Length: 353
Figure 1: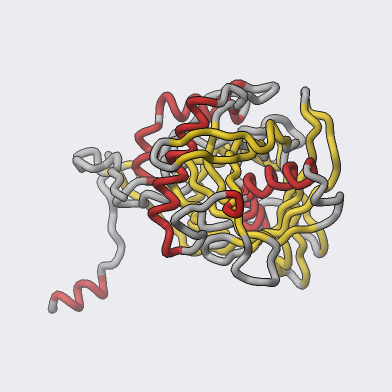
Figure 2: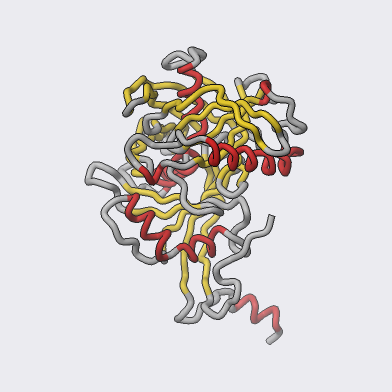
């Protein structure tokens, strides 16, 4: 029997017993990846999502890098681990993973996970609206999936209370100059930089990818060093700047604005950034540019669109905040079994950009 015939007969690889096997379902929301870890990850100890997150960072960070970095991932990879909810009223919890560590909130992941919940029938799916309660590190996110004739026709979520720390701050950034930015929180803190207020040597197109990374990271570093107001009112673990969001005019006249987010260690969000859109809703409400129930169509570097709105106003610690709603769509791209050979010198991954 020839080699090719042997290949046809033997297509299933059996890993050695000492190899770790981790199964995932991979998805994307507006082009932004989400690797959902479903099986094989070691048990996380704790009594809340924040405790699970701390335990994972302390004990299994090498598995984060193994699954996010090359050769299994790439510099802009994103993933999550599902956990028990914080209480019996929740459906499940989630820890978010990326190239730098662990984020506090991720809107594109919430949209993808809500989609997956319906597709996998993790809840009793019914025609019409289905509610999913997801405990993220930043708090309880309530999402909604509309189903018609057994198919998903819409996904939206209500974010945690989102608020503005300050508008029109100025900062000197080495090799760039004076930057004007808004500081706001939408499950994570961002510095929002309006392109129309600056004369950058780049635009918000794919051609400016590397320039946006370089200057977005420089702005993030400068804000982190000089702004001492990046403080969550209730949880110290949430008190850090996640990224820089450049905002500008849309490329498609059907949309209202364009968002490009540079987050973590120079990742470029392919989608409009759900938590970033949430923070923008707080900014536009504070500027009296958006009424409750009024929508904004915000596009991304891939021209994907999220629809943002303000559901209600809330008091949140010392802040006047809002509950934002974000709408988007997600798709499944594959199912994977990753193996980690303990003898592989690159078992924990590496990263190149």
